[in-house]
Image (cartoon, rainbow over all chains, first blue to last red; front, side, top):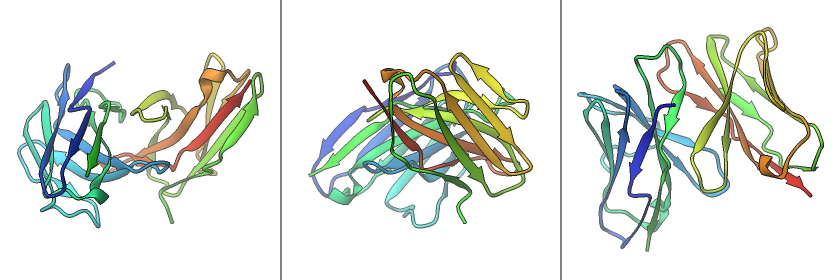
Length: 117
Length: 110
């Protein structure tokens, strides 16, 4: 199946710093990628939909100025958590859909565990 | 009302047991249906797609009832390795993103 990579897999940062997470589709083109956040023992929550070459669409309650998304190419989307605070500590997962496929299936990256101290 | 409703569990079953998960969806425009499996601290992985005719993959059987708008997953002869969270996922026409259930936590006990 299609492969999505994420980098870094885990990161620890100090409060007030910014963290960038990369999501790459390795063997297919993804005009749309999705960013999710998952707190412990909770379900995945969609944060935003990242569209190649245009602005991301954010879900209600997600601050676009805090979670900057850039989708500069068909295989790369980045999420930058700006001025991170301890409450931003979470598991961030991206996914991508293979638009050459007729399936709605999404392929998930392995996730990035962010801890803000 | 949530797009996808799922019993969060947890389900604790002995090895060898049969366990069933159900999930309902609210939007009749829903078009594609999936069951994903998520292990602790890992990303969700596709377990199987769900078709109107029902589909089976080894010990796993998925069914879709469009009239009642629900999806089910049956696991027979549970193994310890089946312990995970099972997430019901729905896609619908006009929406790029998927809609996730809360997931049902399954623990298979020796």
